[in-house]
Length: 390
Ligand code: PMP
Image 1: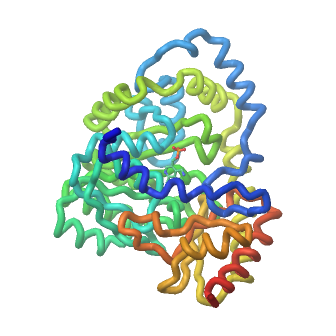
Image 2 (image 1 turned 30 degrees about the horizontal axis):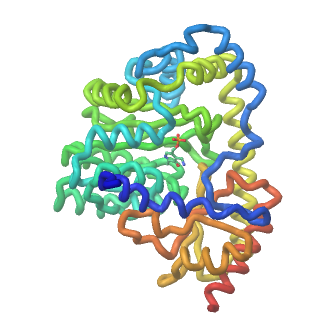
């Protein structure tokens, strides 16, 4: 069949390389999965049962989502700094759909799109469908390189900037307060939309929480995405998008065209769950667990890693970035050395549109069992030194 061009762009995004062949002995630092032990299975079962007692849970509803849930999430985000109401918040199928719908709203083929390098692979897969012209702004320890961004904005037509300011996937970096303000100023100056993807916001293990970029939005040009995937369960496919009315009207129309609405049953269950449990206490428990895992991974890496590799030092989220020496091909190393040693990472190659991050890799400490982290790092470090010698 003669498929549309967008299919090839998305198939080549590298998503398939993420999840390596099943190997029962493998310790995986690859997939960005939450720790399955942290799913509040019982509480969700009760909430789901309760939601099912209402006939409306089985009926079509509207594309905006279940209003009580929208109000609950808006209140949660208001406590986090974004002064909003349920009216300005739409429910999506995870943050992934928020990325897709915003790109669909904004991008004609060839339109300029700035992404961080490296960035979230799934976002690139979504963006590829709309055939943008990509520009890469390198990641720094304090977030996107704004000098590079300004240069891009001064020399090219850009419609949208995609950023993960909090515990970025894949580096774990946090954008500084000054950069958050300056990013909005630049977007205002050059008339660009900012897509702020924030699924890790509530997973800070140390340091002070910074306000979302959306807080500094003076002209209604920042779209904020949230998600229950990392803090409750990804299978709920429950995310939210906050934007100003003009953008929202477009998003709502596109959401209706894409999937009519998110599941009313799931939305009601999540709403029940949030009203029954102490969600801040649940978040505190998550932070405690992931902080421990992060510490184990950082200690092990500092102890075992060969001297020519460096790592980032994430204050939250799921990920850190491992940077190898110049010229190293992490994809080849994974295939030839890491996988045979029963350990896996996400090689950097596909984590930027220009494949500029070939000698780095993303590691997660969230999914592996805590007892597997140190042995996994030992395997990884031994394999990396072996690979570097070859
Ligand atoms: N954005 C980022 C930065 C992510 O890391 C992820 C999940 N890996 C997503 C979006 C998609 O998450 P969701 O399950 O909410 O669609």
